[in-house]
Length: 311
Image 1 (spheres, rainbow, N blue to C red):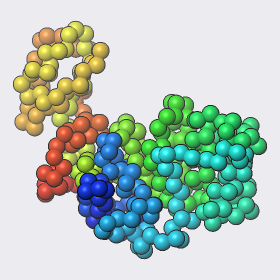
Image 2 (cartoon, rainbow, N blue to C red; image 1 turned 135 degrees about the horizontal axis):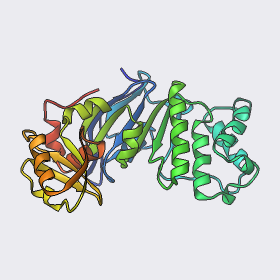
Image 3 (cartoon, rainbow, N blue to C red; image 1 turned 135 degrees about the vertical axis):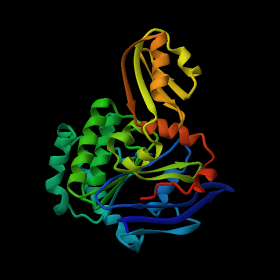
Image 4 (spheres, rainbow, N blue to C red; image 1 turned 180 degrees about the vertical axis):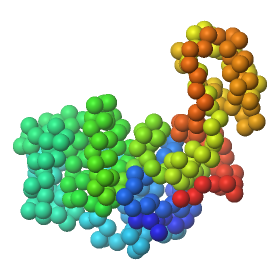
């Protein structure tokens, strides 16, 4: 049993299935990603976890019990649609939102200064929210999500709209929270983010779960069937090589996905015949490559596969 367990939840809107019999288990103290294309059902799933939307059927349990009003004091939730009270000062809005989650002013007063400094917002403590830039407001809302020290933090597309510096800042904070025992659940369609942060993941496509498990197990399922080749010359010919299923081409290198029975050394020998190879590497597929493969397959077929990785 995980800290958060989802058992066969199902949701339909206007005869369209948004989430179809989804089950997953989020272990305690890990970073868990719900990933998938836009419109896959990630946000609907999170809204059901947060009890904003009620599943048509299925059950969600937190710490072994059905979701109840007591859950709000143990969870921090940052929705994709950001929103703060613009006429309040930064400190006022933090105190107000903490109070809604059952934390008193005495509980959080000492933490506010720490988090404003950590998020580089100390100079804005007494300024109104409407004076903040979009990125600053997003960091302030993140503070409000974690200020009451929840057991689990649920983040829907956390990094959307953030510049690289602030993305790195929030990433470091998430890792610190995880080290301190907080469970992190976040959704994203950006595979590079998920691959860098997640220990466990669930991939959703068209409302169906198509992959579930630890990141290492998911990658092992797809084997070491990729070649990274850095070269000089025109690499367009690689798309037609026997044994090569797909090519992602960049200006100075290409990433090749090989067929299961392909001889990687033979493929590499044919490449060397036509371009000057500066560097090559046999590697496991990236989460991006896996995502592209799985998003193109009928999820109904994937659910019937006996080899599916389950956490």
